[in-house]
Figure 1 (cartoon, helix red, strand yellow):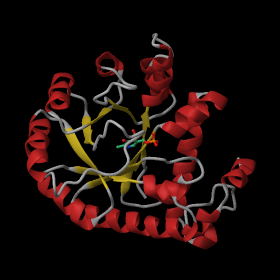
Figure 2 (cartoon, rainbow, N blue to C red):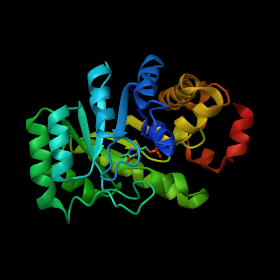
Figure 3 (tube, helix red, strand yellow):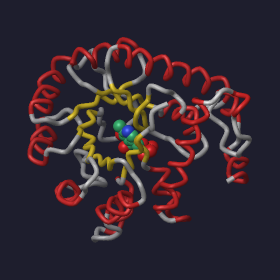
Length: 275
Ligand code: PXP
């Protein structure tokens, strides 16, 4: 199975910085550290209310990173102008509500098709690789393809928040969505709410090429440091990927053998003991 990329979202370094209004901790420093620690890309969401990442962060990231920058943005004229000014490698179009704590669902590519189409076109014309952050729903995937986006990022928030049978059902839905999108020729990414405990079944989906992970990594970094948190995630992703390659009889009996649906019942505290 192909290697899966890890995009590290550094928004919540900026959340901590902004809690005191000063310059530290610096999200750019975190991004450069993540780059050194093996991140394949850096993701940052410039929200309309600038609650975490600010305009100058985007400028600094674009100027100093050697790995790709993925700008998460709402489909607004303001954000389009900022993306065209900084020209990140990629732009992920997300829905944005001022009152939400985090991005709560995927963007509706069907009802917003007419508004999204020129934005996707303008970004693509500027050489920015556009992805649509959507629910793993066939109609949404189809609409994203018709918008001309080469990439979709499947929202894993509902999967992360569910447990047991409900989580298994959502995982199946994500799996089917990834397969359908890949059949349409789209590159498939996924993200939101992923942690050490729930990443393996998502990373094991062969069609998924990239995961974008933020909140958990920045939280874990408080205890272990950012490089170790990234290495821990990388290891789990790679393990899940290689488990998918080998027939069951040849699989190692290591602690991270959790990419299948049965592992979804694993309790977080048990997973911690095994680390
Ligand atoms: N992908 C997208 C499109 C997002 O909006 C976010 C949250 O900013 C993430 C991934 C990362 O989610 P989390 O911070 O829960 O890992």
